[in-house]
Image 1 (spheres, rainbow, N blue to C red):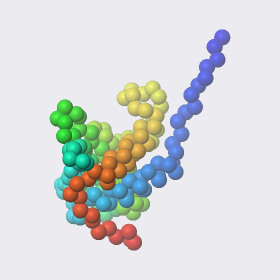
Image 2 (cartoon, rainbow, N blue to C red):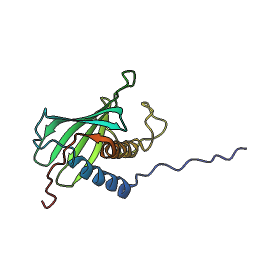
Image 3 (cartoon, rainbow, N blue to C red):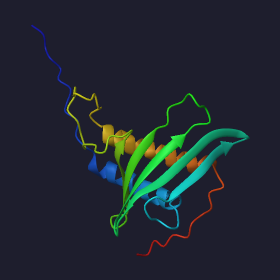
Length: 155
């Protein structure tokens, strides 16, 4: 006679996810190319104390009146490290940026049952948005040669 301690089902922290997406939007605005049209690329070198940490590459895949779709990749100075890639949707009207895909996966659900076929974590989307926040924070700390862009927050 065993007592099963079922783990409670994951519930999306919508307020926390929205706060992360809003913060990511404002961090990304500093890095977006001034001319945002499909195919435009911006690279930021990452270095500190003479050490090269690689570079972050932002590529505009789609540009619509209220939404941009970016692919953000982190290229390491070490050739043997894999290159992580995130697909980020930037909603200019809502002032949010969310990770919509990774490594070729074009769509992420808000929550996953566990276990699942692809072995996604229940909170995979929240984790990836936090990961993007860490990347953007790293660029702010170690970014070299990234000029500040004039950004109009009034609209």
